[in-house]
Each structure stands twice: as C-alpha cells, then as structure tokens.
Image (tube, rainbow, N blue to C red):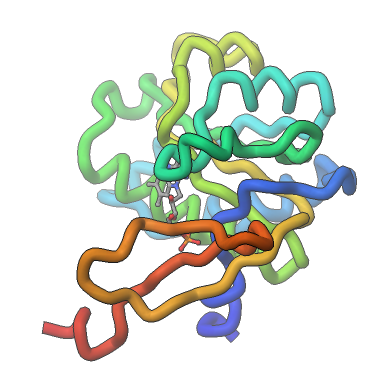
Length: 190
Ligand SMILES: Cc1cc2nc3c(=O)[nH]c(=O)nc-3n(C[C@H](O)[C@H](O)[C@H](O)COP(=O)(O)O)c2cc1C
C-alpha cells in the first residue's frame, strides 16, 4: 500500500554493508521512466552506481544531515551502497526549469517508494558538489545532475513524530534514533 510505503520511506543516513545489485537499480529506474513529465518531455536520464569505490567517491561530493552538523553523517563505513543520480539531458531541455525539478522530484519519490517496497532505504540529496559527482561517475557534460539518490539497506532507526511549532527539522536521541517531525493532517489541509 502506498500509505505504508510513504511512512516506511524515511531518509536514511546510515547503511548496512549489504550489496545492492545493478539489476535492482535498473528495476527502480524502470518505474521512474513511467512517471508523469511536464509536456511529456522526458528529459531526465539516470546514472547508476553500485561499486564500492565509486560510491565512496560520490559520498565525498555530498553532504548529509546538515541540520546535525556535529554528527558528520554518515558514520564511517555506513555510506550508501548504491546511488542513482537524476540528470537533465541538456540536449532534450537546455534549461533546468521548475518543471524539470518537478519531474526530478516525481522520479525521485517513485524510486524511493519502489526501493522501500524492496526493503531498501534511500536519501534524496541536493546538497552536492556538481563537479565532484560528474567526476566520480564520469558523467558527460551533456547531462546535468539535478538530484542524487543514495540507496541501501538501512542500519538505523527512524521514528516519525507529530510536528509542533518551533521543532527542529529532525533530531537524534541518546540512542542515536533519528526523529523526524511531520505536521498533522489538520494542519496541512487549508
Ligand atoms: C529535495 C530534497 C533535497 C534533500 N537534500 C538533502 C541533502 O542534501 N542532504 C541530506 O542529508 N538530506 C537531504 N534531504 C532529506 C531531507 O532532509 C528529509 O527529507 C527531511 O529531513 C525529512 O525526513 P524524511 O525524508 O525522513 O521525511 C533532501 C530532501 C529533499 C526532498
């Protein structure tokens, strides 16, 4: 059920060393390619990575959990075991317009939900060094990275809290459990 997957699909910033196969990433992108697209332009392309060395290089070009700067996430050895970088094909669309970012978000969430269905966790990352990502994955200049998705088997526990005014974006407790507050239904329907 989508409701259950949406609840389960929490941002994960600590992964187990369990391998993620390239074929699994391909099945995720096979879902994303069916997503709606503004004007059905379908200008998104997907760069896949699941080898340990390259994943380490991609990690270096990303920033995780900026709201918890004292934690320096992920902990050593807990980086993602796979990445999907959502890119704009500039030959299909020269500009990264708001519609392109909408397309990227729709594709990203579709991939994250499909991953959750397979028992994989994920993290959407927009805080990345574009040149570092392009270099690590040898991405041709034609493709512009818009969003990085980290994927793997979770090694952490996350709890959803009811959001109240003044709460931080997220926090960790003394047992390193990650708490993520969400507004209640009555707050978000206007
Ligand atoms: C567009 C977008 C960009 C994000 N970029 C980052 C990022 O660069 N680094 C990071 O650690 N988390 C990033 N996140 C994850 C958010 O911090 C996360 O969604 C938020 O804390 C709520 O947690 P949840 O995903 O478990 O609901 C991003 C999420 C979205 C939707």
